[in-house]
Amino acid sequence: MIAGRVQGVGFRWFAQDAAAREGVTGWVRNLPDGRVEAYVEGDAEAVTRVERALRQGPRGARVDHVEVDTEPPTGTYRQFDIR
Image (cartoon, rainbow, N blue to C red; front, side, top):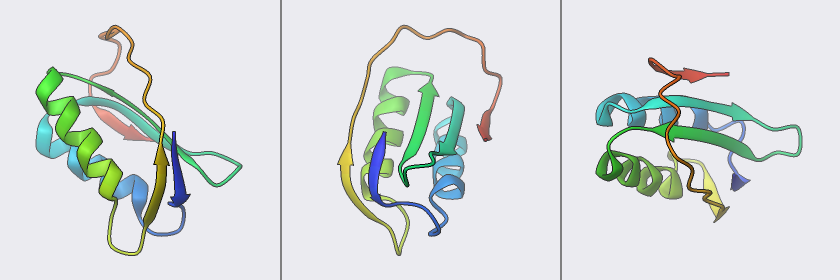
């Protein structure tokens, strides 16, 4: 979960671009409470680079808090989607 000023600033598209750059799969979505949730699968180093990018966010965003849960990859996703 990513909290701060993360909705209305292109955060989901920023996440999708970061995921495409790193070749990871998964999804990103807005939550009703103003946070953004992302699920990222792929090479561990690539996932770390995406996480680092999400901690910065796009211009206009302000990331106050990032909560990371580590789970085994499911292999379910073929691409990175905006939900």
